[in-house]
Every structure is written in structure tokens, then in C-alpha cells.
Image (cartoon, rainbow, N blue to C red; front, side, top):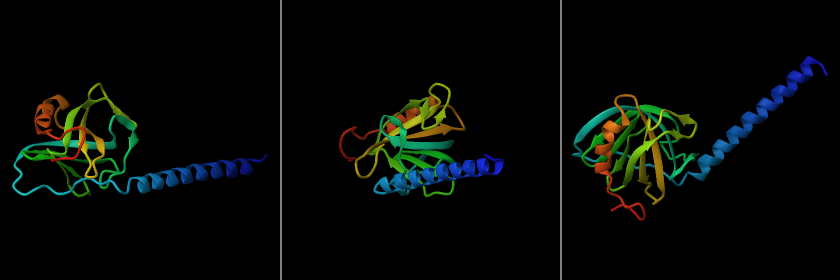
Length: 168
């Protein structure tokens, strides 16, 4: 076998792997097309805190390796976590603002890993919330300003949704 043939075989394998990745991602987008995140901050919401963050992923509840492609939370992004008196806003760069009302927030805690992101123990903030169709999901955030334990009490006070059922 010559070098050219070996190079062609390696190139063909690389193209097949990339195509498989593309088709798998498109299938995931179709699977989750019925899910979406609530958009827009309500009028008269009083801002109580702002924190820089990296949005990591949204996954099925208690399944940190099962990514969901909720629009506009399908991809990682930089942004800002805005705490208000009515809930939490995820203001991601280049995307509409996602607002998780306190009636949708089930709980807030810390995590160490989500998808392929592993950080120091309890380095991620995990928000458990009800998607509008009633599916329980987890969103993972990495704070760039402050530590998770500093904002967890404020996040926990905002959580008022029941774990089972629909938001009030």
C-alpha cells in the first residue's frame, strides 16, 4: 500500500466521522424541537444582582450527560446571570434573554460536572427548572465573577415551583 492510498483511507474515515457527528447533532435538534426556554424578562422586575457567567449546558434532570438542545440554550455561551425579584434571567451573548420565573424554578445547587465540562468540586451552579411543556431540566452555569456559594442563598429563595407538576 502506498502513502497516497493510506492518506485517502484516513481522509475518508475522517469525513465519515464528521458526517456521523453532523447527522447525530441534527437528529438531536429534531428530537428536542418541541422544547424551548421561556424568553423575555417581565416588566417591573427589580434586579437584585448581576454575575458574569459561562453557560455550559441544559440536560435532562439528574442526567448530566444527556444534553438537550432547547432554543436558545443549545450551545455554550458567555453571558450574564441576572437575579430579579421575580426569577432569574440568562442573558447570553448573541441570543434572546431566557427568563426562568420563580414559579418555574424548582431548586438551585452546585455540581462538579455537566456534559464534557468537569471543574473543581461544586464549581458549577445547577438550576433545576420546569420547561414550559412540563419537562424537568437542569441548566449548568460557571460563574466568572463570584463563587457559587455566594449566590446560592438568593437563588434558593427564588425557587417556588413544585418538582412534580406544572408551574403556578
